[in-house]
Length: 225
Image 1 (spheres, rainbow, N blue to C red):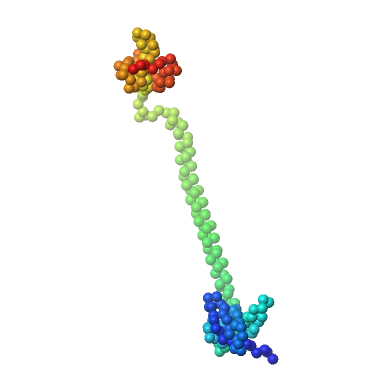
Image 2 (tube, rainbow, N blue to C red):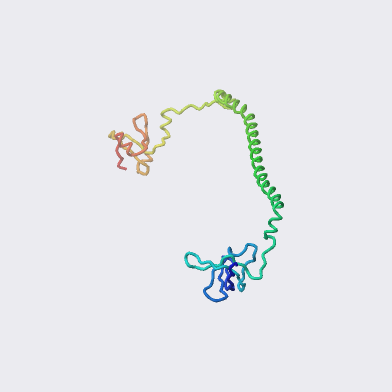
């Protein structure tokens, strides 16, 4: 004879985590119930359901329910052995197109990629064929164009300034003057009292300096005023 299953009432159930506890009908410690102990075609347990179960003791000493069922709840006929044995062929027929569809879906992107690559190669080849003669002609004509004078360019008739004219408008501001009375070489910087009245005569050895250090190095000394 098969053992009589235990019986108890479901006192708590956490549906989001899939477990709860059964209070045995004869009293005693509550028994742990996991959703995996119930048939797959059974509805979700609810607090207050009468649970039929087989008590199993785990190695750690904890008691849990196994091969459980809800009293008064009949399993769905869709998952009974009879229905499973009578419906193998329709399931096999349906499984064929479902396995072929992903293959067809995978082939289409590959064909599109090859087509896009071929179009891109043809486009680059066409551009290269048209651009090559232009680049070659430009490369050959550019040295010749640089040698030939431009027809619109006018000849430069401006003569370079003479050495005297170049020093007439100096870019340096320190005046190197030679005293007429003593022959001393004195330099004047902007802001000194005699700076504006001092004239530089290049033909007499006087000269312009850019810095005082340059004047001192050349033998000039700073004017008293």
